[in-house]
Amino acid sequence: MIPDILLDALLDTLKVLPFLFAAFLILEFIEHYSAHHSNRVLSKVGNAGPLAGALLGCIPQCGFSVAAANLYAGGLITTGTLLAVFLSTSDEALLILMAHPGSGRAIASLLVWKVIIGITAGFLIDLLFRGKKEEKDLKEICKGCGCSDTGGIFKPALFHTVRLAAYLFLFTFCLNLVLALIGTEQLTVLLGKGTLFQPFFAALLGLIPNCASSVLITELYLAGGLSFGSAVAGLCSGAGVGLVVLFRSNHPLRENFRILSLLYGIAVAAGLLLNGIGV
Image (cartoon, rainbow, N blue to C red):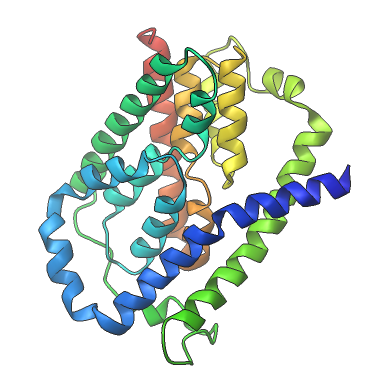
């Protein structure tokens, strides 16, 4: 069992490497070549950040959550925009649904509701927490790691990617091992099937910073183990590896826990609302 779990963890990690590397390359490019243009470019997006973030986040892959976490750590996007991306991030969930015949309505509903939740929550958060995180030189994010001691953008980006990939591999292995020991059937019972508390448990499962959690939530929904509202709650809180990148790159730590709490609270509220209105 252990060799299979190691192989799965390795494959899951390899899948996100291109997105990680691309995100770090973009940040290094901004730092080295276009820092003086960034404020002007982002000012054109302005208050529409949550709208753009939610629309980009719904594309079925978790690369945008990685990029958003890094951009937030550098003070380049608002908290509302970051949460809009996290809430609408779909990663493999929609791809799994597409593989099941007759799931077109479920795909459309999930996509529409996640985007609506992301946009609404993003604008509301920006309204409540006015002001953007203080913009900083992106070198401050790398302070002490030694990755920015060399010239160019390729080597620092590669350094960050390899370092984060090692962490993701370890986490993915631990998650897959737990799932193998517990089993999906028992997990459905633990998630409170048929109870009011199911969105709370589903959103908690979604917080696990790995694409595997969204895969599991989607499969449980298709198998009838989760209601639609609970599935939305789990998928809204599931920001993929974006949460790992946020805690790795952003400081202070209490700010990350505040974002985590907001993400979880919004996902649960959305799930309870959808279950309540019978969607």
